Image (cartoon, rainbow, N blue to C red; front, side):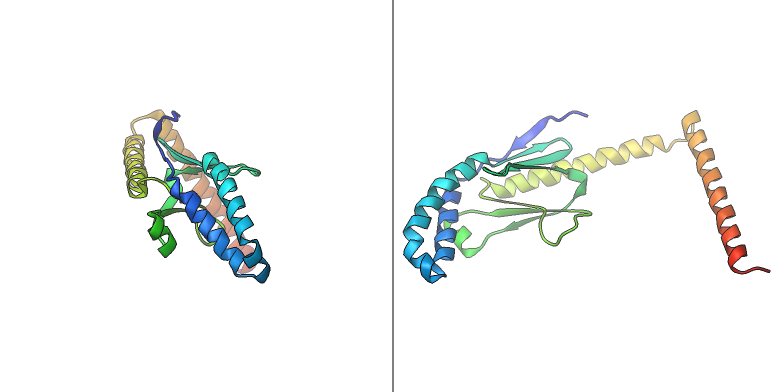
Length: 185
């Protein structure tokens, strides 16, 4: 399986401003935070540069690889066939800075909400469309492969059919035995 990179996301440096504003706002909610808000702004500005430099998102042929984190580095690999939704959102502060948030949800994820969220991707709409097009082309090519493999002209397909038939017959025997034991005649 080849892992050819189709596209790689770049991030808008304005995301640093957004993070700084958010952290200063959060710190201003508390009484102590109001006093410390200039310090919070400086720390947020410095830390946000490292966070931004550590973020990456690569679209490969069959998966999306997202890396982020400075202290705790996290790399998530999301198979394209598992992606169920890519939400594009923009709050009022994000709108002010011209930023979007992409949220990826997958089939079978255990928690509510997005599996991965990325803020500040340059041309987020185009990145989203590229992912969706690759996902569609991947599923189209898999459907063609499945259709070819369904042709029963090979010995392998005949053997698989025989094994499946025998499995069904075994299941029927087990069910009959269970029913006879549950309801004796």
